[in-house]
Every structure is written in C-alpha cells, then in structure tokens.
Image 1 (spheres, rainbow, N blue to C red):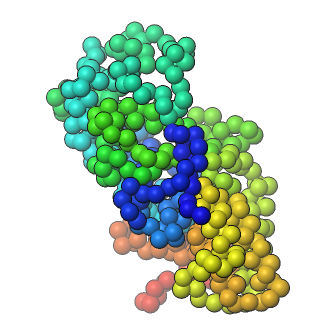
Image 2 (image 1 turned 90 degrees about the vertical axis):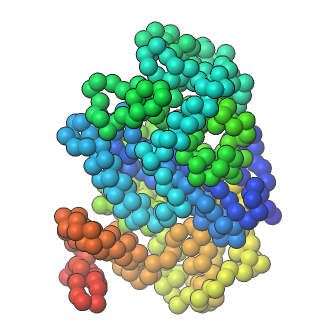
Image 3 (image 1 turned 30 degrees about the horizontal axis):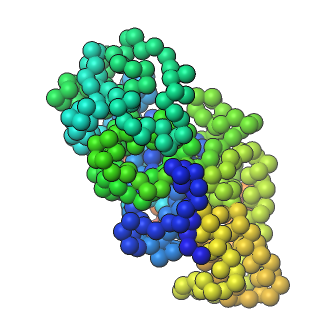
Amino acid sequence: MSLRIYNTLSRALEDFSPLEPSHVRMYVCGMTIYDLCHIGHARMMMAFDVVQRWLKASGLRVTYVRNITDIDDKIIKRALERGITIRQLTDEMIAAMHEDIGRLGIEPPSVEPRATEYVPQMLSLIGQLEGKGLAYRASNGDVNYSVRKFAGYGKLSGKSLDELRAGERVAVQDGKEDPLDFVLWKSAKPEEPPEAKWDSTFGAGRPGWHIECSAMSCATLGETFDIHGGGADLQFPHHENEIAQSEGATGKPLAKFWMHNGFVRVDNEKMSKSLGNFFTIRDVLQTYDAETVRFFIVRAHYRSALNYSDAHLDDARQALKRLYTALSLVAPAEVAAIDWADPHAARFKAAMDEDFGTPEAVAVLFDLAGEVNKTRSAALAGLLKALGGCLGILQGDPKTFLQAGAGVNGADIEAQIAARAAAKAAKNYAEADRIRQALLAQGIVLKDSAAGTTWEAAQ
C-alpha cells in the first residue's frame, strides 16, 4: 500500500508522492522563541519528527525545514523586560529549545532558518505583492495585504469572506482599508530598540509574522514544495495568510499537502501560555524520563487531541517497561534492514502508511513483544528494536531503562553528557555545571577522565 496523508486543504486522505522523485521537501512552522518550550510545542515537533523518520524509513530523501521566529512583539517585550538584547534572548532560548527537544530524541531539521536572516527575501516578496496590487502602504506607515483581492482566500481553513466579515472589527487606528487585511511590514515605533528595525523602501520597520514563513519556505525549498505542517492553531490565520502571500506573488500552489497536528489539552482546554495551563518540557523531565514522554506523545495519532496528565504519563511509563522487558530477555539480533515482508513489519508499515498511524503501529510492537516473551527469539527482538527505531523509541539499554525507575534512561543521560561537552567546548561552564547538577539531582554521577565522561547511579 502506498503512503496516504490527510491533506487539510482537501479535507481527505490522499495518496502521497513527492513532486521530485524520491525527494520530499517539507516545511514546518517552528517556534517563536521568547520562552522555554512546553509540551504542546513538543507535540508539534514530535509529530513532524515521526513524519520525517517514516519518510526516510520508506526510502525517501527528506529536506526538512523548521524555522525559528526570532523577531516578534513578544520577543521585543521580553528582552526589554529582562534588560538584554533581542539576540541575547533568542540565542539563550534557542539553546534551551535544542537541549530540551534533543533529550526527547527529536532530530534536528535539515535547515533551521532564523527569520532575521531572511529580511531581504521578505522585502522582495512584499515588493512583488505591491507590484501586483495585493499590498498597499497604509497611512500609519505599515504595508498591508489586501485580502479581498486574493480570490482563493479561505480555501485552507474553509472560512468564507462572509463568515469572516461577521466577526470583523472596524479598523480605525491601524491604517487598514479593510478589517480583514493583515500586516506585511510593521513601521518602526520610537520605543522599539534599534535592533528591531530594518531600513527598506517601505520605511524603517520589521516584517509581519506571516510574511516570514512565506519568504523562508520559498528561499529554502522553492516556490512549491511537498508538505507544509504545523499545529492546528496555525491553520487560520497564519497558514491561510501564507497561501495568500506566496500564491499571490508566484501564481503557483505553495504546498501540495498541508498537515496539522492536534492540541495538547489539560482539563479539556488547549495547553497554552496565554491560558497559563502549560508545563514546560524541562519541568516534565524533572519527573519523567525523556523516552516515557516521547512514547506518551508518539502513541497518540498526530491529528488527535492529546490529554496531558500524570496518570497518562504513568501509564506510558508502564507500557514502555513492557516493551523493554521483552528486549531484556534476549539480546536482540542486529537488523541491517527491516524485512517489510515479515508479517509484523508489514502490519507496522500498513499502519504508518495510513496517515502515520502510530497507535496501530505501537499495537504491533506490543504483539511483537508478546512473541519475544514466548519464544525468546533474538530475531524478533531485533525486529522489535528496529521497528521501535522508526518511532524513535526502544534504542536504549533495556536493563538501564528498567532499573532507572522514574528517572532518566541511558540514551537521555548520553544526550545530556553530549550537551555538557558542547557547553564546555564553548566555554559555557555555568551551563556545563548546571547539567552536571541536574543529573546528580536525578541520581546520576558523572566521572570525567582523559578518555571522556562516564556515568553511574549514585549509591
């Protein structure tokens, strides 16, 4: 069976084939980087980590772009509150994000563009839109997009202009000709720091959020690419506005497939910073090991809502222990390449080929674990580990995982040791010491020697 993906644009499952044979180009809207990432952010990045892992496991080459928004109202406000530069804030938060998601086994994208590095491309795109009559200079110095002049507006979200008009507010002070219009270029404000402003033919200012992704995706992947992804909250207005900008400028489809992951919910409300009901990745990893958190997220289908609670994480931990228990019974045989004709592998593939059906794929892993328990087959144990690797799980030492209780596992410890080594190499000794102390708090003692760093459980 060929891979099928649910396309938000068509609201249907469609057969997937890349525009360029054997090469998938995927863009995912990443973080606006002014604070630590929470579990809702981890869910988004995990969803597309699994997508790119499965595409690679299917024999495809993947160019995966996940951007960083490093200029934004919230970023400016937070930097001013802390009395540091915007660059200091964003560098700090990017490093924290990389550490946190690295512990969760989320692989780096092929390209991770920062918005501030692509301002010339954004200005060029705005110029194209103005030349086509889709953008106009407002009385307050902003440059806005004229929504009603783009015939396809609303096709992704399913919202008609009449529906949007029903909820519109009169725009008196913002210089818009129509309340539905959105900003492409924000004119500089006197109270904003110099580093938040760029000179341009439109006057000093900075880009709007939506134009950033249109410019970065085009610059890194071309005018049309295979998959555009992000959280369900970005479907409207962000992704709708990206389509209007990109397709308005080029006349070509922006992406063939649009994918959106579901929310993380707490007490039936979306987890978000604005609601104050969020848990940072760092906070959660103080209590639960990284692989348990990963498994908790991965075993739910990416489009479904994910209900966060300690009870669900405890259940994920116990379920993962069952899989590792099977691997602890016999040394898994090395699997050079998965034989997809094997019945278990074929079922796993069928599940993943149906819109990345991780719940059904995980069920196959438990069936395999049951067979390993009964047969003590090294070959089946090897297949269990190899299939788990497609989801980024079961790659640690089974005995270490089972002995760690609710602490960290071997792979997580090694990731933190690597992060500490990188910090020491960068002469960031405070961060290196923080990692050592964090591990010690979890019962892990590091031992440095000329040969490298080893670890052991505290006595």
